[in-house]
Image (cartoon, rainbow, N blue to C red; front, side):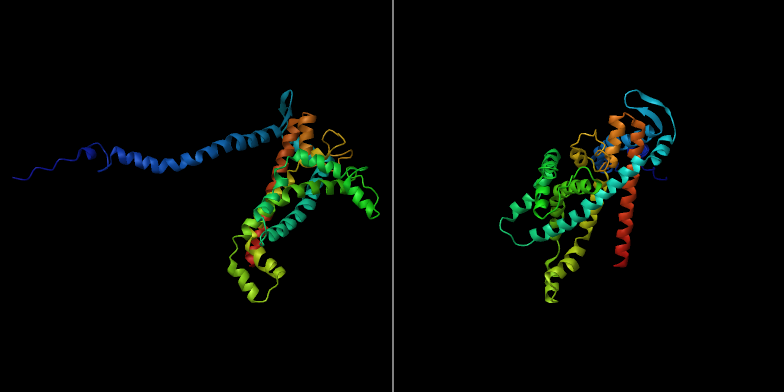
Amino acid sequence: MSPLPAREPAQRRRGQHPGWRPGLRLAWLDIRLTPFLFIAPFFVLFAVFGLFPLLYTAWMSLHDWNLVDGDQGFVGFANYTELFADPNFYNALFNTVSIFVVSTVPQLLAALGIAYLLDRPLRAATAWRAGVLLPNVVSVVAVALVFGQLFGRDFGVVNWVLGLVGVEPVDWGQERWSSHLAVAAMVMWRWTGYNSLLYLAAMRNVPAELHEAAALDGASRWRTFWSVTVPAIRPTIIFTVVVSTIGGLQLFAEPQLFDAAGTAGVGGSDRQFQTLAMYLYEKGFNLFDAGYAAAIAWVLFVVCLLSALVNFVLVRRIRGRE
């Protein structure tokens, strides 16, 4: 007589894997789903406050959209065609790039120098390091008021100092080059300390053995700084360059508040320091042409994106040569 077949486990009869218990199922779900739950808030917030406004702005740029009356009809790329033929747009683009270059290059070089000084042994080092961050936490409105007085035409401190060396008073808000320098000075004063602390944090992580090897080879401090320290903190420098580029191309608060003449946010009597962000504000909130302002916003987005790509390509080439 043949033996009776063994009974099939109840779990297998129900189509389950042997050992597949409710507790294991919960553990499997926990392993699979918990990481997504942790990162979900970021993507939800980005979708609501980042992706949706971006796409909605692109839709508005294709319409004749008035800020008060709403959508007046689909116009396709008419806003972009008008924008690329608008001399005020190219004026604002030139002003934006000019102020960005004048403010960013000296700012990052000064931040490197300040970080190098703060990296050396100092008394009350913590107080000095906290002090360089104070300009960044001061309200930009207060900064604009102070610098507006410093660069005043008749009673400004800057003109008084220039007068001591025989230079005629400068009407800082009326000429293109002078207004760019004044706005750039505000930007540099506000952001140099912030960037210097980023560089300082990177310098503190440079291995001491590299500096000791340079000293044994007879390198001076200046040579050690440029040949050892700067290459070691290059990732931080690249980060500050990219962030400063994006922030400089979106510059709005400093030139807007510097417009003490009350020219309705057009950047001076002859638009001599109007930036792209100020031109967007003028079209959208002064003239209520939201469709045209949306087109400016997308062009500004593309300019920032191209600038980031140029920085990326330059970094790849530098690393390839090394």
